[in-house]
Length: 148
Image (tube, rainbow, N blue to C red; front, side, top):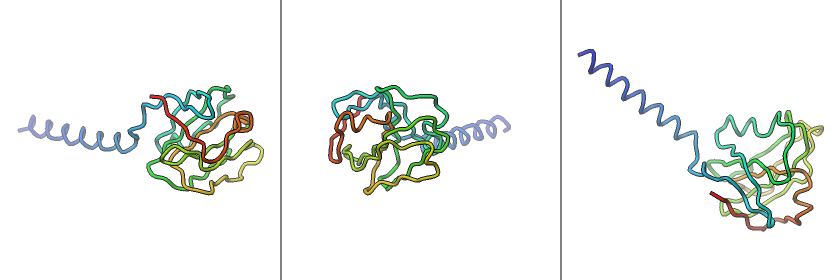
């Protein structure tokens, strides 16, 4: 009888752990890069709420071909700020069909607690080095491709 109870408990525990794990991750976890303005950007993903909150905070730098892609569960006007950032960035909001819907150029750490909110809803947000948008003539409406 004890073995049946233990086995049942383990099954229920695995079930709840699975539900928690899969509710925290998006099916897009395989994204490894973003092609934007003709440039390939290697991305780290921010998928969970904890990863969204941490973002690039505390990182020393970001290379020209690196970025962070935030993947949200649903499109919304996701706000961003520069808490605990060590360098300026461009923040690029992308629609669910992967088009640029807004850009904040040169978001600077010293302007915290200023909050940047896009003019339209976005499902993804890409953070890249400051000056990227200007250098590559990025504009609202540009199409973006993900690499898997």
